[in-house]
Image (tube, rainbow, N blue to C red; front, side, top):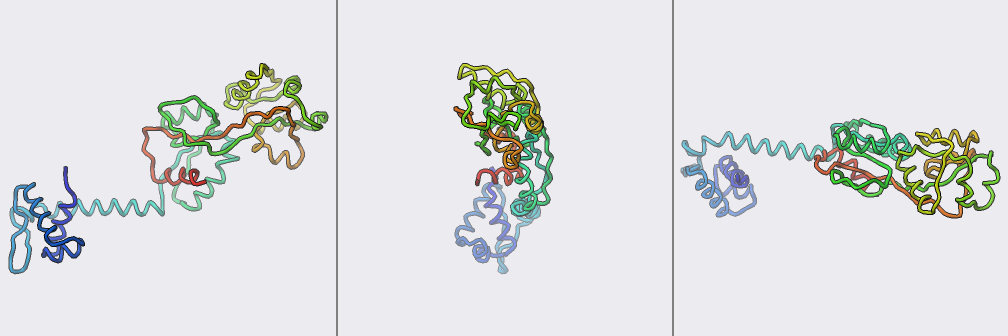
Length: 296
């Protein structure tokens, strides 16, 4: 294996023309410089320097032959170090993010804006889809990071970076059902109302069905939808009772176009998680982006 430190000592001695000055520049002792030169000469099988009254000069059959190549190599390494240093303050490239429209709107939009203000050279490619399709895109290298609704099945190809956002599911209704705004309503009673639920293939719906199944009940929705926004519009028009994370319904609850139905049993909390492929390298830009979540 190439010992870069030995070549760095060789280069410094060649530039300084003196063991003493090289030692001062490298902040090591002169004997240490001499030992490094002798070790490199043994490895290469040639003498690298000749001693003259002017100091250390490159030998014609050794030092002069490799000096230019060593200089190029060290300059390349120095450039690489400078590049990394620059990236710490000016990340570049494109970050491909997979998530649902709702996660982009209610969770990621502010994060992306904040990151762009700090690293304006970084571009974003936003890929909106349901959680199952987002996971497939991540595994197919169509996105670099995914934000998905949890829980999801364990996948050995992916690593889950904790819970990024807590979701608290609630029942919502409009003034079409005024009786539900008074007191506490039982889950067994609510399931007989016209229900507007997410599509059965979504994580949110599967979690809801599993919870009611654990209570010995089954939900029969009147309408199934593919987005939370559509659910809120239909509930506001009196089409039925919806189930939605409170975090996604705050505006409607605040302007009183909808109200939360208080239930005798709270629905289980869920969360949004961050997924990364285990085998793919993480660019500096992506590292900076995901690091912003771990510090919260």
